[in-house]
Image (tube, rainbow, N blue to C red; front, side, top):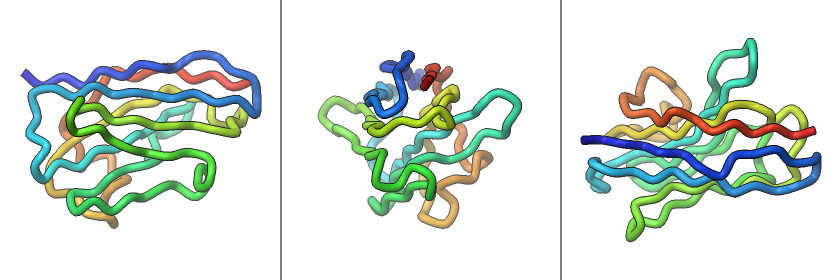
Length: 124
């Protein structure tokens, strides 16, 4: 049974930090690609940060130098460290996973079959 469970969201003032976690179960680590997406109210879901099957990392331009994606294979957990948060970062953040996704396709929503339910991040 595959589960992706996000945690760590909340409300923070601009300039603050949050660390999101995504506990992954039921999926092999081998060949797996993992990603963080977000969806703001009234907007489409967009890729934020992702780790490709070959380990390449991609960030959307608006979060470069502020967000860091990482994963702990021993704990089977994906993280997103978010610093210098801005009001425009407000959204529901989702983690996603699938297999065989390489750099150019990391932010294509349709490439991911497995999704968490999301965690709300609010920056004021």
